[in-house]
Amino acid sequence: MENKVVGSIKDFDEYQGHKIQKLSLTNQNGVTLSLLTLGATIYEINIPSETGVQNIVLNYYHSKDYLANPYYVCMAIGRTAGRIKNGNIILAGQSIQLPQNEGKTNLHGGTNGFNSQIWQGKIIQIAGNDVIEMSHLQEGDGYPGKMRIKILYSLSADDVIEIKFCAISTADTLFNPTQHIYFNLGKNDTVKEHLLKINAKQIQKLDSNKIPLADRVTVADTPFDFRQPTSLDKAIAAMNDTAEKGFDDIFAVEPDKDNLVAVLSDPLSKISVAIESARNGLVVFTANSFTQQNMNFVRTNGIGKRYEGIALEPQTLAPSKGDGLFSAIKLAKGEEKTYTIKYHLNYER
Ligand code: FUC
Image 1: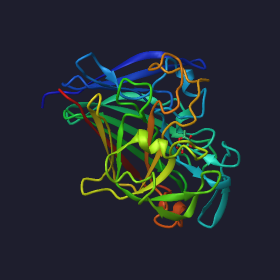
Image 2: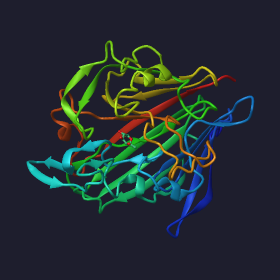
Image 3: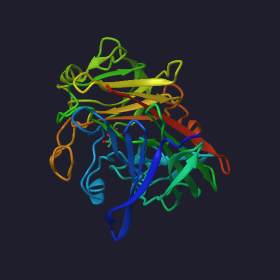
Image 4: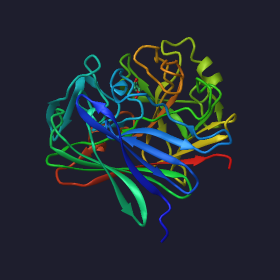
């Protein structure tokens, strides 16, 4: 078979004395996906356009910028995405205290989560195409078990990016990974012109620390109704009276027959991304709290802007009504578990 997706590795910069590499894949359409070994971070998704290539994800000038703020920009998230109340978990009847890195809450894997690690990056071959493999032994993050984790990033000839998180642990632990990609599919400073569709009839109720509560509420007749493609401008405006002034919410998604959970599109650039995930949750964060501090973005030339991007984070929720999260995301000792997220890219050729 002809090799159509070609990989490369380059030095990017240094972070705390460690060499950070940039690994890239390019397909025959001129689409490029690149990652940094710091945090297994998606650095660019470049789409060919009439006016040159367009990067549709937020990125920074330097590795250090990624950890200078609490926004996890495009980084791998684990062992557990989202918030765990008081950082306290129960596994096999035992109570375990995880690191608390947002007040008392454990957020996105705590202080030494996947995003803060330097990964081993390699280009490997699968079925004749180059694929990026990021691997790492996750330990010392307060979760039980040493976790051998491998994330495979691939790009197909028809512009589908696939992320495969594969883990195995030396003790029972939790595993609920995601990739915290912020998309901005256009050339504007914000995503307000974008349309968003989400296959969700309900969102999870949250407490004042954004911890999921047992109840879910229907999206009908609320700004959370994205069952049809909906203007983000209008939806964000409808949230203006809330403290958040935008979305930072957990949607209980129902994947359709193709496992699609959401579609983000920009009528101006005519670029869209359809997200495929078999999991029952999608966190939507419209970057409401982005400020100009510590946000050295390439797109806006070193300045952070509110609504500059939108993070759409597939993950596993408690099966219903908030019960049983820990059993839903448990990884048993010696068990191998894989989660897959796919991003279908569409654009005008
Ligand atoms: C999402 C949100 C959080 C946080 C993070 C960067 O997961 O739920 O509030 O700000 O992204």
